[in-house]
Length: 245
Image (cartoon, rainbow, N blue to C red; front, side, top):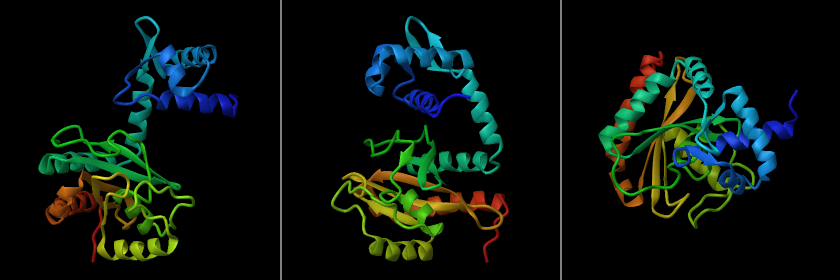
């Protein structure tokens, strides 16, 4: 059985690949991860042997087809993912903004999908991040509040507006539960705002957050953005059997 350190190293290698880094050279990846080239080379060969990576050209690596098989199996086990993903893309086309789906994984908020069409305007914070700060994003706050979770311990302060106080969080969480949506502005990064609403299953359990991220000046369009999000999320939840009173 592989040791925890070997598994951790393999995870670090795989997660180094993203939309900005679809390929890595050994030397560049070594510098990025802070791992000796000799150690990293062994890890890359082992991952290539399993099909999780593939070697292309001379000394360059990219993700392998086996990951696509694994991701297909994962999505196939989540009946809500396909309709939620379609709703996310509709939101992106309707708002011309970055739309996304986030889930709560233990104490972590993970962005499991982002829109690839219908967007314009300047970049916003977190366009490529997989794990989001739960206390500084609308999706994170929504998922924490609806799950009745406290503010994460040791929450980092990204801007002067980042919420880090437990008492203030309890008050805000109560408002989020009452309103049914969450909104942030300049809490993760100056100039970035976000808005999120829940997607529910037939029993009313929150499956994911559907959100948009916009430049802060655009948050004044919050009412129209919220309506688009609520309509899209309600359609998915209704499809999944949710019948609110």
